[in-house]
Image (cartoon, rainbow, N blue to C red):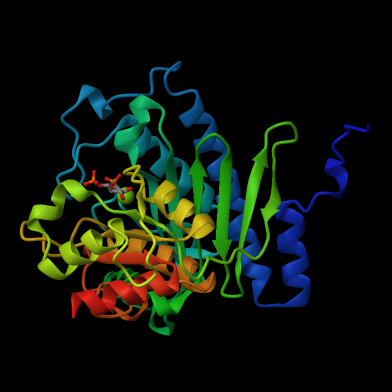
Amino acid sequence: ADTTVHSASAMTLSRFMLEQSMKNQEYQELEALMSSIQVACKMIANLVSRAGITDLTGMQGGGGSVNIQGEEQKKLDVISNDILKECLRYTGKLGVIASEEEDHPVLVEEAFSAKYVAVFDPLDGSSNIDAAISTGTIFGIFEEKEECLVEDDADLDEARLKCLLNTLQPGDNLVAAGYCMYSSSTILVFTMGNGVNGFTLDPTIGEFVLTHPNIQVPKRGKIYSFNEANSPDWDTGLQNYVEAIKSGKGESGARYSSRYIGSMVGDVHRTLLYGGIFGYPGDKKNPNGKLRLLYEAAPMSFIVEQAGGKSTTGKERIMNIHPEQVHQRVPTFLGSADDVTELEKSLK
Ligand code: AHM
Ligand code: MG
């Protein structure tokens, strides 16, 4: 049998973007952004895979370095943030970026009045790094609101402030979102609002190739993915829901399995492919849960909805929420449409 892999005919991410932008002019500028994001993801994938060898596991500065949310920063969190920032800066398309690892949104000076705003979590799930468990990069792209286009003679400080406010947009305004998962393979999944496609990094040619065209999340699954250790602090509606699905007393009658990595990208990726429900609920201690709206919950919600699934706080669509703060948290439930609808009923 011929075992040659004909990579020359593979749909690489670059070719995919080229074809998309030939069909639709609007994607032309996103092409440049996607091309720098894919480079950043390749660099981060490489660092993550060699972290144990190159002494990149462990804490930034030997420990003690914390981000604005009081979380300890890992060396790789900081490096991944720098890589993404640098790669995005030179596209000339971005005016502002907001990141989990930056206290405040950062203005990209090279392109003060560019068209897009990027939000990202450079290395989500980084508490898993030291054990070589999957992690990921999450990103979202908004268009800049008009007020940010700065005139030459404008008061720069005032203009700057207005520009920074551009990051506070609801998920519904996202023009693209995606994640790159660093696992047994490196997989980049993204949407530009016309479906969801997944690309696997082929290390033999250094290119992302289309392996998961038009991802559709199954209408119903059999897996739930929550940090169940927090369940004593959950509200009773949620406790009852999980009790029901694990004992076969839910709507589908199936007995669900539990899977939880503690890495949102991995848990959401599995939910997209196998179906079921992933969540980080609010609880007595943390009423808004843990996940950040702008660069975790909203981009993932866009992807899940584009794949035919649902995403909610339990009370409203996550994509509807207008952020008030860059690092604002939000209770998050997403996955198969029927599973999320069933959960919503029990929360009422
Ligand atoms: P991080 O951004 O600091 O890595 O935290 C986010 C991660 C998510 O990937 C994951 O869903 C969640 O934290 C897990 O939290 P917990 O350990 O409380 O279950
Ligand atoms: Mg994170």
